[in-house]
Each structure stands twice: as C-alpha cells, then as structure tokens.
Amino acid sequence: MKHILKFLLLAIIPLMAFTSVHEYYVSITQIEFVKEKKSVQIISRIFIDDFEKLLRERYDSNITLAIEGESSKVDFYTERYLKEKVKIKINGKEAVMTFIGKEYEADIMYCYLEIESVSSIQSFEISNQVLFDLYSEQQNIVRTKINGKNKSFILIKENDKGLLNF
Image (cartoon, rainbow, N blue to C red; front, side, top):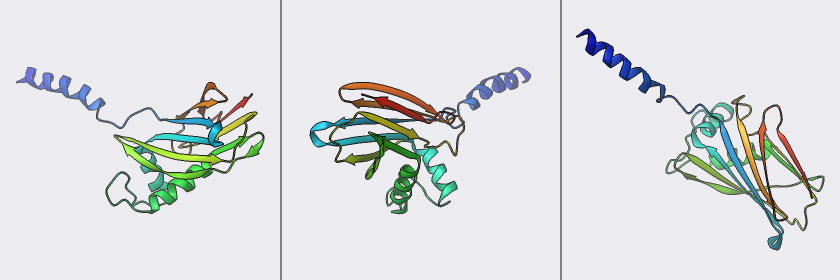
C-alpha cells in the first residue's frame, strides 16, 4: 500500500505542474507598409486569457472573450486599450490608427488595425506597452515589413520603443 501511495504522489505532482496557466507572457504584432494602398496594416496577436484578465481588472469584471453573443463592450474596450498602449510615429508624427476588428483562433485573439494615407516612410517608431500593466515579464514582439525590409524588435517594460530609419 505504501508503494502505491508513493507511486501516485510521484506521478501526480509532475502532472500538476502542467495544469497551471502558461508562464510566458508574449504578444506578436506584425506591421506591413502596403505602398500601393498607402496603408500601414497591423495585426496584433494576444493570448485570449491574458487580455480577458486585463479587461476584467481594468474595465468590467463580467467580461468574457471568445463566446457567442459576446458583449459589444469588448470591441469598445479593446480599441480603447490598444490605442492607449500602442503608439506609432511615422516620419516623426504620431499616426492615427483605426481599429478594424478582431477575431479568435484557438487561444489567440487577432486584432486588426490600420493607418491610412501614408505615402512614404522615412522613419518609423513604435511603443508597445500591451499587457505591461498586468505582467512585468510581458514581452511584445514587433515584426515589420517596411520599404521591402524586414525588421523585428522585442519590447519589454523597461524598453518599450523601437525606431527604424530608412
């Protein structure tokens, strides 16, 4: 009987380590300048559970993401938060982003934004503070494709800005 109890403890304890919430906090934002459309297109991928926790703590404790009949408040709060936490300057001037919408796939929320009327880019600066107010270990990866060049940044709370000059 003692051997069975020891075996069960040795088998169960390691399994419990995998039942906790993921222990890495990361978002990925892809930015592409589409010269023909004079548009900067932005797709930001964020874990649904992290963003839901943020919305609950910041705005409304009853919000639930990725459900049928989701509250219209979700889009309102998502747009508000992203516009507050993601700042872009093009050629030294702050750009105005339009929130296009969002969708869910598995455990990821895809947020779509756009900056219109951009004819050329000589400099591009981004500050991405998404989820820094919730997780100090959050990392925001930014991948850009601007003027035919691919560049990437890893932004952290202590260094939340990236600058490219062309």
